[in-house]
Length: 369
Image 1: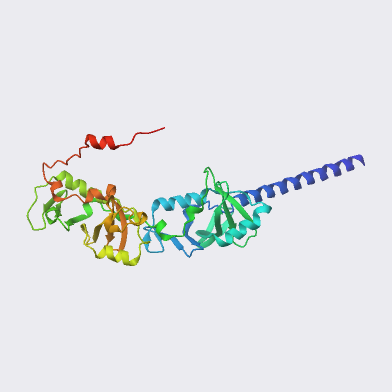
Image 2: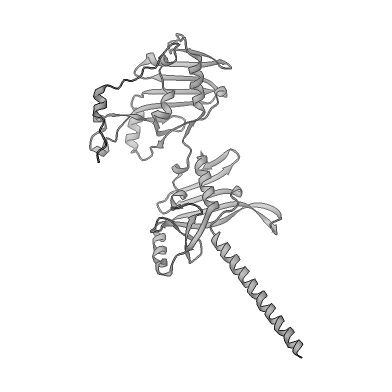
């Protein structure tokens, strides 16, 4: 009889232990799943990302065979795409929003949020994560990104259809991530103007509107063999190394910023005014790109002056991209090497060095404590 009681007690204890372990495993599994609720672990399977904010901005990022596209039209910045995929992979729940603050957070998110939709290729049949059959595209994540927390180390998020908000953070990163989910298409578009290998270029023509003597044209005659002449047809005895360096510069040329915030009347005024330089590049497959540059002023409006009364910006210019009908801002540091005059390429030419006079040095202020 005692043995039976002992056996029953042992059995009950084992059942309780097993039930406890099962409950704990399920609880821990639930916590792990909750912590990864907004995480996209397999970013290689992501096909599309859609962001929309309360200001009416919307952007669709799509994976294609030729790279990621913005709104199925423009090339996306590879760095931006890598950044958002990294963010989705490392996104973790920090903690739920406290009950005391929850209603205020939800109210705030109702007025300011970005909707995030993630589409992935997933199997219709997945057996133990080993056998995966019938892959198809599916909407896998829908959530809303809210504002930053007061300590600037977290971001509020809410899953679609849920009634509980969370604070998320980027694992291993101190700060907030709401700005990474921008719904403005311009934030995602690639700033690339030219991307050609030297062997792709057929010819290049540079026109100086006010100084035609500086203008020239270069034609490819063979492998690393060129002909250079003024636009009147006279030949130029040029430095081949400089021409090769120029053509190599077209491998990666980018503009600094879009200028879509300029009033349409102002934009038209700039484009219709006389250009400074006009660069025409032709490739061997018949593609032609034309860019016109214009003088840019230094923040004339910000100082209460009209633009005509302010100094030229030596570091920036307006640039009109004829192929896409867009006005952008270019930086002299990146673009200036393409705008050297004909004289620069002549054999024996030495670039003059600017001398700094003692009076200029005396004008440099000293550090005061």
